[in-house]
Amino acid sequence: MPSEFDLIRRYFTRPTRHTLLGVGDDAALLRPTPGMELAVSTDMLVAGKHFFPGDDPRKLGHKALAVNLSDMAAMGATPRWVTLSLALPDADEDWLKGFAEGFFEIAQTYSVDLIGGDTTCGPLNLCVQIMGEVPAGMALRRSGAKPDDEIWVSGHLGDAALALAHLQRRIELAPEAVAACLPALHTPVPRVALGEALVGIAHSAIDISDGLLADLSHILEASGVAAEVRFPALPASIFLVARLHEEAARTCLLAGGDDYELCFTAPPSRHEEVMAISRELTLPLTAIGMIRSGTGLRLLDAAGQEMKTGAMGFDHFA
Image (cartoon, rainbow, N blue to C red):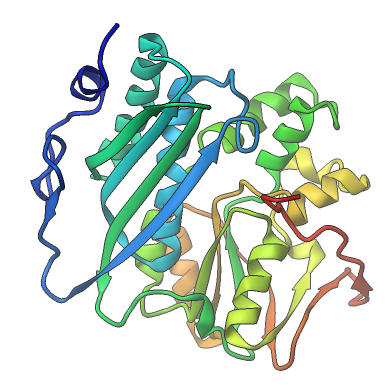
């Protein structure tokens, strides 16, 4: 049976681009770019909580890094380095090969170096720490939203949660809807280029991992402001729109989580600049509401009447 170090050499040792010393020593050596600040984040994916134990390892490799890249996007940071720690029930080399292929494929796309980590035997658990760079004093934060800012979201919301609801047999989807929604769940696209483009334009940002209402509420709490969100303005795929008469589908849109889109606020004076970014990136960006003075989040229907919000989002301890 291969040792821990055999597995690391075989599957997780690759050339680096931004690193003085990477995998293979007691610690990595990094040299941040002058004039830049480091942004650091960690995410853990646990079998049975965040993914099914039998999920495709290649897609798990993609997602394990993608959710961390999304955190960099929310800060306006350029991702540079990651560490990877794995708890594995056994040294299944077919699984490791697929996982490593998915992980390094997206790492190559975003020019990220794997610089270290750890492996151990235990219940399947994937933990990635990511580090990126952002110009000093320019990071996007949750605490910068201001009254009269427009609230924006990227892409479409709810497809990942809709796919999960189908897999859990809470909703029955047609085959074409399953095929369209599953990529949002298994291989999300981190909005790194958008985050970089919003530096100097957006007042605040967050990535939507736990659900729109929950994550927007984090911005409101950190910024000490309130919000009005127009339910009819929320961007949803045709498969979700067709089911919005169902409470379960509305929950997917508002509170399902796993979207990994960006929610950000920007002053109305920057509206055309945001739309220009949308065109340049060929990425839909939708204004869904406004930041107000006060506290709380109001969800409004087409007539401007307040709607009940119901569930707010994913809770790791629920």
